[in-house]
Image 1 (cartoon, helix red, strand yellow):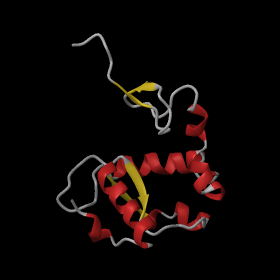
Image 2 (cartoon, helix red, strand yellow):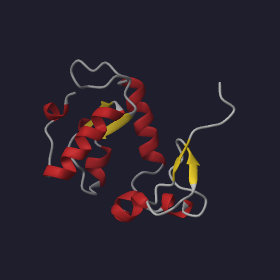
Image 3 (cartoon, helix red, strand yellow):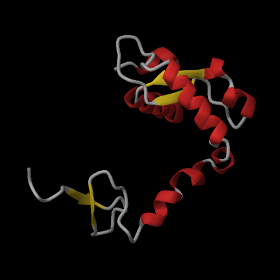
Image 4 (cartoon, one colour):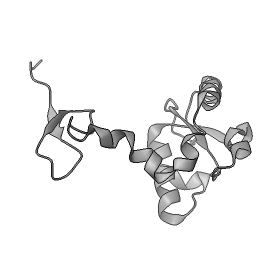
Length: 125
């Protein structure tokens, strides 16, 4: 094993600083990490509090595998089937939840943002 850890460039394109793999920003730009998500949906950020974390943990314990047919990966994301659009009732509705692995969640989310919606069967590998 090498005594040196791999390094990559800071996420800010013009920054010459290197960071360890798994770290997004250097110390100069670390403040950006705290603002990435809230800038996109500031009104939704407050929904992800203790009640959501408890529900997410409960859901993933009961549904530990990705729901995509043939995947079989361990689910790491408790996904909303239909975008709740800030509606707290829909946000906490267990009928609107599904377990996805990170790969399928990212694929589904990418399609939703690109095309406006995604059907559950449209994001298989």
